Amino acid sequence: MDTLLTTARLRGERAVRASFAGAAAPGNGRRTVFDCEQGSFLPAAVLARPEDGPESVDESANRAFDGLGLTRDFYKEVFQRDSIDGRGMRLDGYVHFGVKFNNAFWDGRQMVFGDGDGKQLGDLTGSLDVIAHELTHGVTEHTAGFEYHNQSGALNESISDVFGSLVKQWSLKQSAEEADWLIGADVWTPGIDADALRSLKAPGHAYNNALFGRDPQPDRMSKFIHLPDTEEGDNGGVHFNSGIPNKAFFLTAVGIGGFAWEAAGPIWYESLKVSGAEAQFQDFAHTTFQKAGELFGVGSAEQSAVLAAWQEVEIPIRGVPTGVVRARNLAANGHGGVGQQDGLAALTKQIGELSAKMTKLAKDVNALKATR
Ligand SMILES: [Zn+2]
Image: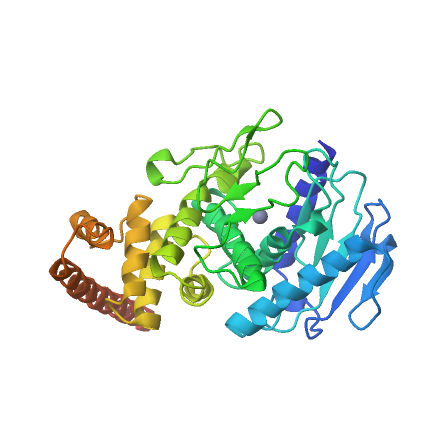
């Protein structure tokens, strides 16, 4: 209860701070880790490790330091993004927050880690994907700004899982096939083997235990969970329905193959940068399809993988007939001929071109409206 209340209050802070996004002091992404010594008043925390300082005697402080650094370096090297806000925002981390606090979160300005109660959650600094998940909320705030409720909120959560997993895959140099696609495997229910907080590969199958029951995440639109847009309803199920776009990303990444941060990652990242705050699943699916065409070519294997992935989670891209993707899936499974694949490539190309024309038309119409 204490964790829930504290997190809700700090999430509120995050929302407020996001609206002052421009106010953050630049700091070349420099890290500073502080020790809360089990307190929950951040200004009282003591310095544990500055960017240029020696290693701390506290392993939590070192793990937080490393996690912040790997996430920052991932965004820099893979997307040429300068820290969370793209302008070198400093990264402050607070460890040992509260007593047995079962959470880690980014409050809009800093990253806060609880120690966990050792039963439901272990020390939250021990999970790179959880750290990257939280920091990515900052990236989302400074880009699309997906509103934290219903489908846009589930997209917000999904983006954090996607890049959270990518940071881990990148740090371990794992291909899409090799990766475990799990979030929080190393900190979730430390006493229970082989489970995690969420799975992008198999939403709904991350855990099944006496403590929490079964992972309730849906992996397709027909299983979408309708919850009230309240705190108790998880703001319309943002941590539930994120399973749907999560699965779409996983399918895209394995559909393309190789390192997920090289093709699927850029498609999602570029889509995040151009999406609106109220985007729905359908909008985001459409944007990724378009971006895949822009980045890798209309009708490319990458764009076809995006198309098939969204189709699989029952979010067909507008204007693409269902049968086309089935034909592609058959071809991909080895049951179809080469001709079928070629036919699909040509069709995907046509659709991509049409979609580009539509976007241009929409822009023209908006421009016309603006001049009236
Ligand atoms: Zn989150």
